[in-house]
Length: 413
Ligand SMILES: Nc1nc2c(ncn2[C@@H]2O[C@H](COP(=O)(O)OP(=O)(O)OP(=O)(O)O)[C@@H](O)[C@H]2O)c(=O)[nH]1
Image 1 (cartoon, rainbow, N blue to C red):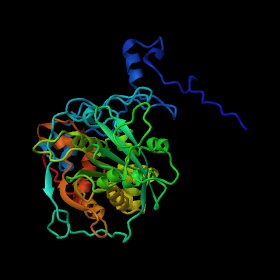
Image 2 (image 1 turned 90 degrees about the vertical axis):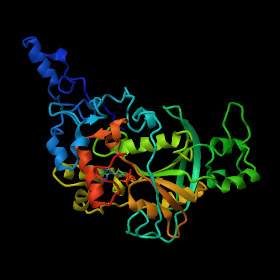
Image 3 (image 1 turned 90 degrees about the horizontal axis):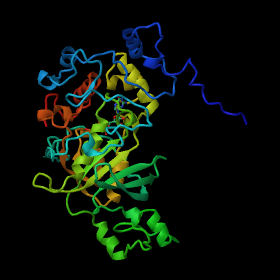
Image 4 (image 1 turned 30 degrees about the vertical axis):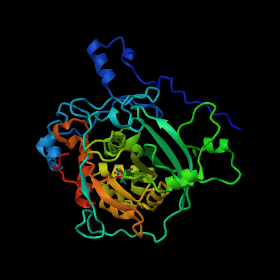
């Protein structure tokens, strides 16, 4: 077997230059300039703050149709970075060895969102009529819902102090591990709780099929027939649900091309709120589907990004790559919600296709209300920060104009 040699990245050819490397013949000013130059990085090196070739200017925002009112927090022409939030520049991207507190994907709700109980806008929905609040497009649905099986569940204490239960599902349609992120302890999976032939109590505890909490020395999963039947009725109230499609770029590598990371955080924040007058239910479910890049996968999505930099919008880029504008389906989400004992839901989305699609071929699920997802940067007083960049402006504009998303460019939350 051939031995693998680590790349010689400490050699002078690859080493990341620092200000200390400045030639002794350079004066301090030259040395500083040299340090500011964009270094030639070895391919595996963690990204450093990158100069953005396109600056956000009033002109750019106007051309995207974003009003001056919305653009007053945008980066000044002098700034070379898109901004996160109102005043602060995008935090420098640093080595994964140091995970910044605001890393998308690991942060849940309030690390990127102000902790105040911002109410969610919600409107009644009736998909059986054209004027029911979810457009008139009827997505093609498969007549038979996929089979799903929750194979394991675990309690996750989050960085905000909220707890959630992560449910991992298998299914008979693809080999991906789709997830249900469940806030609150009222919602249980029927397939997880079902007793498996030959399993021991310890097996049940290990796969998360227990009631209450685990503690050192616990030996019983304590799921009686009686408890199972009461669980199968599901939660009493209409839970808040988000159906979220995977976005590695927006949730993990700090992309300001889309607001996916922000939406995931905001959904978790809303599901962590205590009950109040404006918030009738506590808890909720995020169905996290592995449909990266609207179903085209990460490699094709990255090609689409390059086409976008060449001038296409997000829909055109997909079509140029011979993919549909949106290649996703939601049958798995319907099956997972049914497994979690849910029938009526309040759905967090602006996407009309999602409303009808998640209801299933025979309205197995009913969306009673739609809760709008208004970008944080568009919210009144901009309390929660939010992402701003030319790219995200274009991304949202295309969703509204070409994909029928129920959001207005000047809408305020
Ligand atoms: N092909 C492609 N996919 C993208 C691009 N930007 C983001 N995405 C994907 O778009 C999807 C976003 O999905 P969701 O967060 O479920 O949101 P949505 O369907 O747009 O609608 P909402 O529920 O209103 O947020 C994710 O799968 C992302 O990976 C892009 O430029 N091109």
